[in-house]
Length: 433
Image 1 (cartoon, helix red, strand yellow):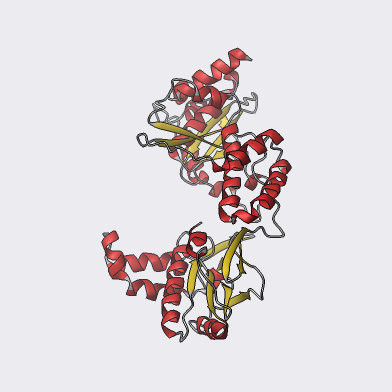
Image 2: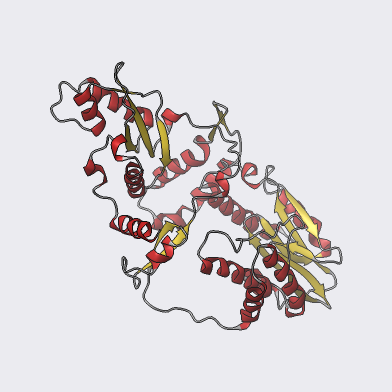
């Protein structure tokens, strides 16, 4: 929308052309030393936002984007040889800083400046004199030998940029919504297990985006496209027409006091009951839903699997084998933020010294002391992984509660802190069913 507002009232001359530039393989193309050099020269803009010294700041940055370019594949460790590390949170920021420097430098060198220049990461759009296009491309490509641009010209026709289609009409600029030929038109399906308001808002946002981007003359055509997209995603026809008709109705904004947001996994029926309950302050807290059935769970993971013993921030279970004469089969559930092998070493140590300790650290060690049983440390199961400490403790308690009482090793106190709302809602749900 910012792009649209910036160019919608421009006039384009006959001798000018619309062009777009794009960097080839942005992150691997940007030399790390160049990024570090540019940031060091801009230290006066950075220092007011940090308590670090310049040397410490640059040392940490260098570690993040140069010394830490490692990845693992099929059990072997590799180092990325050039460019910003793929997947690093710092890479997009450094890349954007380098692109800003590139534009500032190149604009000073150009004899013929573009009428307008916009940038979104490495996607550039400009209106420039036709005779200056090659000079502009050459200047950009000469900034650094590793950073090269591709170019797309209008050629007397529309030019796609981001999700807009920009075209000229009688020296004026018109805009329409653009969708790539490979686009699947898939959005949140109407029957998906999400709150209905979230699903409806997905359709509403699609409509607002398409119609706000495009000029009014394209609206009827785009409305038909919207109908096809929403129908493909199982939206009812009456709802589609209502959402389209509501497009021009101004939305009133809630100017009440600021709210805090917390997320919870959406469970049909349970979430609505929780939302309508008095278990939280609705004036201060807003509940946002999320799902644990993500795309990540549907596709094969191409990354090398981390060995079970090297995983951390997990909830795990250990089954007790008992003795040679007596099988046990009871289960202990635990959690650890450290590597699983470190926690298991602790369990083994507790059990080994169980006769010397009057007070056992875990229910597993106490169980082994009372019955002289031996756990099966070769068949440990990882039940779930969760980085957030509070969520991990809650998940541990829920997994303990899922084990039948006659198979449970954990202390009763291990679940005393289970959230009241979970117990209350699950009991209420159980009564209704």
